[in-house]
Image 1 (cartoon, helix red, strand yellow):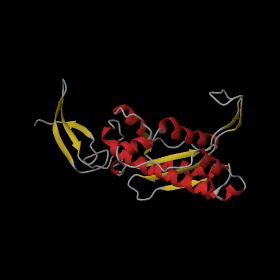
Image 2 (cartoon, one colour):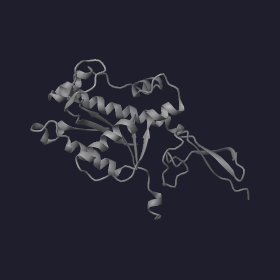
Image 3 (cartoon, rainbow, N blue to C red):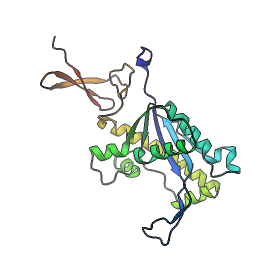
Image 4 (cartoon, helix red, strand yellow):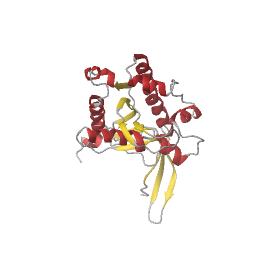
Length: 248
């Protein structure tokens, strides 16, 4: 590893996608098997921000010229998301491992885009579930219970139908809703970061390899059969770490 690479900071991407529903034929309404798909989902929009960045961005179908003639063609939106994946070292999403990341990569495959460079993921829903026992691990409930804020209230499925029919007010609401999800995601991520024992480490050379802060304190020792480690805690993000203790 070169010395220049060893001092690079992690690029941490926070993102959230919104998709259209699948349209299918069924014989009934409640817990039905799908007879046949009429139309599979497409990506309506996604919101994102880089950790530490001031503004949250949104990329939606209606922002591209193609939308007027092909309102369901999500290639331009997906290409933009693919570019961000290429830049990111760590990708943060709520329920991202099961939904956002997999759905995004499905679209990369369908649109024949190159395989993104390797990245690490942080799923804030899994972190909350693993280290806590909240009555709900939904982003809105976590934000509310932790005193960090709420998701944007919206009219429900009508907002999705409005976007699918080209209604500008529905699009305005969808983009606002999507952006707030990412703003809230960042707050939840920062609140839970100290519990993330497997959080990817940076090579910035800073005392804390998670948040790259400088306020790290020594807090006792960890003894194994063969070694002694100094316990360390970052008072900026709450992350615990250890380093080999030299008794000399």
